[in-house]
Length: 153
Image 1 (cartoon, one colour):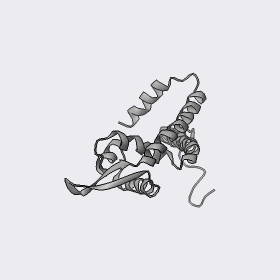
Image 2 (cartoon, rainbow, N blue to C red; image 1 turned 90 degrees about the vertical axis):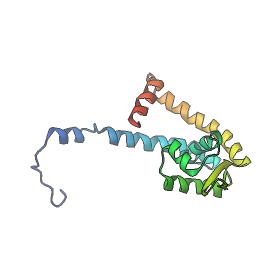
Image 3 (cartoon, rainbow, N blue to C red; image 1 turned 120 degrees about the vertical axis):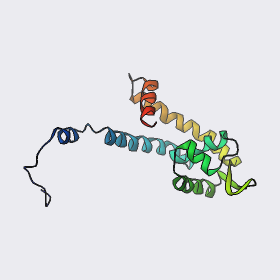
Image 4 (cartoon, helix red, strand yellow; image 1 turned 135 degrees about the vertical axis):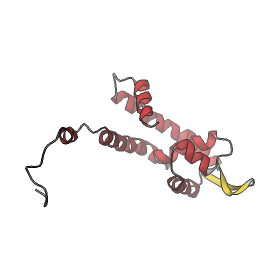
C-alpha cells in the first residue's frame, strides 16, 4: 500500500462508483485515445495525423481563413492550432500570407500538394470510419454522433 493510504478509508457511494469504472470522462478519454491511434495509423502513409488531417477540409472550405477563425471553427486554442499549422506548413500542405486588411493576422490556404494530400487521405480516413462502424455493429452511429456531440456543446 502506498505511503499515507490506509486500508480502512471510508468507502462512499461516489468512491464505489469511481472504482467500478463508470466514470464517463475516463471512458471517453480511453475511447478517444484508441480512436486517435486507429485514424493516425491509416493516415500515416499520407504523412498526416488525424489532428492535422481534420484541419485541411476546414482551410479548404472557409473563405479567407485566419488562424483565429480556424481555431473557433475547429474548437481549438490558438497555440495548439498554431503548432499543428506549423507542421502542415513545414510539409508544404498549407501556406499563410499576411492579411492585407489586418497585418497582425495570417490568411491560410492549402497548397496544391495540400489539396492532393487531403483528397488522397480522405480515402484512408473513410477506411477508419468504416472500421469504427463495423466494430459498433448494432449501434446507430447517427444517434451516437448526436449524443456525443451534445457533450461537446
